[in-house]
Every structure is written in structure tokens, then in C-alpha cells.
Image 1 (cartoon, rainbow, N blue to C red):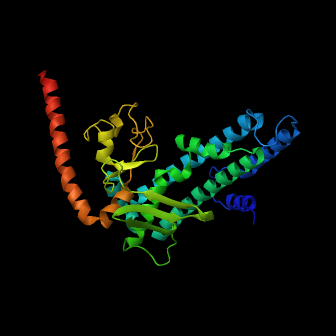
Image 2 (tube, helix red, strand yellow):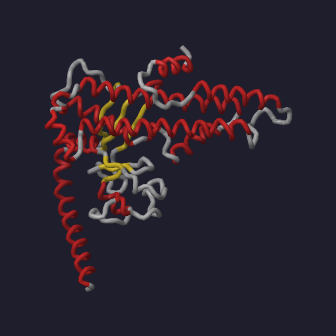
Image 3 (tube, rainbow, N blue to C red):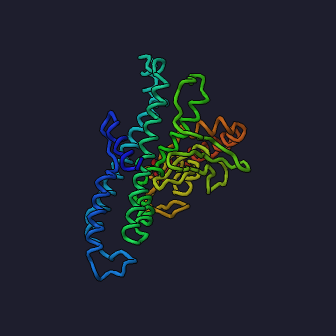
Length: 321
């Protein structure tokens, strides 16, 4: 079965109308572009014109808009799902009072997560195939170059930190006593692996898509502790990220200046929207217990020191000393 037909069946089978990459519409745009491109007699047959009115004005703007909508929907729904698993603060207390935690269908919870993973994967495949088709029509590599642009715009769904959280959620849920033997798996072959004590998350998705997420902090060169993902997608220890952003733990990453850069990709403005990876934190704390205890003691001392310095500075400022 051709992907276009398979994709249309997937969209039609959805109970909820979610934003998708309109693969059929984009193919029609490229078909129109091909006719326009082949009608020109002045091209050399080997390269795309510098300015393609169809692509510049319709194809790429439409693709960017649809990819943004897909990523936004995926992130929002993944966040909502994981909050049911790890509800924050008082919400957890009220949910317990209402009995929602005890009554929650964990099979249904996993199925919802599986649907989200399928949603992310099939849209990622649609993007990959339509860009490949673009390059084939235009004898170019602009479609592949667009992938880098999409990553810098944070609209590449496979780069979403919420996908990493779903992977950790999948492993955590398998290890709990509430798991059911009849529960469907979110991922096939998803696992936390260690190579020379260096951890990574890996899994295989549809159409031979493989994800490998390195869980070594590139600042301290240890397993990420209290992991946080910057908006560029790179993962660091929270304390290391604060150090790189030139802020204290007391102030937090939201206090970082917009000019501060990611230590890896050197992009600016990546700290304010940083995401704490709670599911990943739980997974690593279970898998690296001895390391976690040592790191916890070390960081507790550092946190106390920074908090003490912060309040001493505030007191001096208040007293005008």
C-alpha cells in the first residue's frame, strides 16, 4: 500500500480531528510545480530555479504551518497525559481524594500514549517523504536542507523533548506493579542502554525510524542529573544548565538573559522555555541508584551554598551595605 493511501486511512480513522501534515495537498502543490518547472525551456534540467514561485509562496509556508500545528498539538497532549501519571503539587492530592488515581485505567493510559507516538511518527514520515519528493522534482537538496531549518524553528516533531518523556514513561510504566500483561506497548524495542557506563534511550519506530538520545551531560560529562531540555532540544543537568546560563539555582533558568547560548549548538534564547524531564529523572534514579545517591549529596551541598549566598546578598542589598 502506498504511503499516501495509508496516511489518508490513518487520518480518516482518527476519532478526534487533530492537525496533520496534509500530505495529499502538498503532493498536489508539487505536481503543479513540476508542470510549471518542466514548461520552462531555459533551465539546465539539473537544478532548481533560484526562485520557484509555487514552492516559495505555497509549499514551504504550508509545510511550516502544518508542522508547527502538529508539534504544538503533540506537546500539549503529551504534557496532559504525563500529568495524569505524575500530577504536580496539590493537584495530586485532590486527584487522590476523588479516587481518580486508583480508578485510572492504566491500559487506557498506555493506549493513549501509543496513539500519540503513532501520531508523531506518521507525521514525521509524511514530512520526510514529501521533502524527498520535493528534491526529486527539483533535482536539488533544498528539501533535505529544510530539515535543519525545521530543527532550528523547533517544529521537528522527533526532536520534541516530550517524545523523550514518553519513552521514559513507557519504561517506567512497564516497571511498576500496576502494569497489565494485556497493556499495549507505546514503543517497540524501547530501552535504556549503557555503553561504558554512558546511558542512552533508544527505540525503533515505523518505517525504520530509529531514535537514539544521549543521556550524558556535555558539561559535566556524567549521566544527566535532574535533567532539563533546552528549547533547542539538548539535554543537560539542571545545575549545569544554570551554570551555563550564568544564573543561580535559586533564580532558575527563567532568569537567564536571552543572549545566553546553548553550550552545544550556540543558539540564543534557549533557556526560558526549558523543560524539566520528570519521567526521565525517575527512570535514571531507578537505574543508577548508587550514582544518584552520590550526586544527590553533592548537589544538596551546592544548593545550600548558593541559597546561603543568595540570601546574604539580598540582606546586604536591603540594608544598603
